[in-house]
Length: 276
Image (cartoon, rainbow, N blue to C red; front, side, top):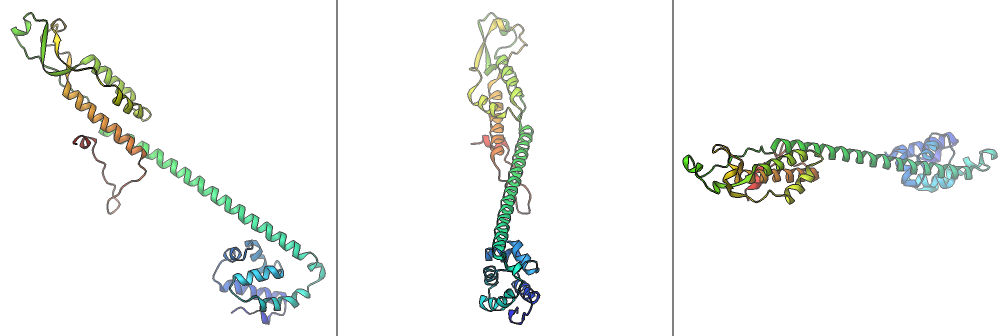
């Protein structure tokens, strides 16, 4: 155990201090923090570069968990024996060194904190960019294909050629012009930047009203079909809307669920969200 009583020279006293700090099992920085000193001050004292003032010695010994009185008693004659030139303004100089050391440590702490904040910000931004890219690729993989049946007339053959102001479809239909305009708009907005606008478009811009009759004069050929089955187009829009909403959720969800063993949990298919 470190004992200052046998120290007869400054070097022996410094060796005892060095042993005292070593026996704590803590680093000089930890001891300095506990003592209210700078790490440079503690390292300078234990290395024999700086001679401690009484107040500094007491702080150091107290931080190491020992009674300060034996150490001050051993330090006093050695301090008195030091040349006056060395002791002239030593106290003031040491206080300045301690203050500067503490300020350096504080600045180092601020720099480390700033670096950590910057690193966390950069990592967060990279995670956000990766999350949006993954969400967009998932959207492209699940985006439905616009495959619509053409609406069929209830009449056929000679009946279809008979004069009639209107012809009937077998089920409600949307006009092909309106549907194609809608598909062009979807194609225009189906980009990583445009998907939020596509979500708004799907919510506020429905197709025109469906119809089941068509003027006979529009049917130039009884085999020609000009419109699409309403149920096919509606199903496509529903699936597309679910895909876009899933994309928006994936963009804002920063938590990736995992299965036991680290495997990623597959996302629910957008089509599954249609079964309510």
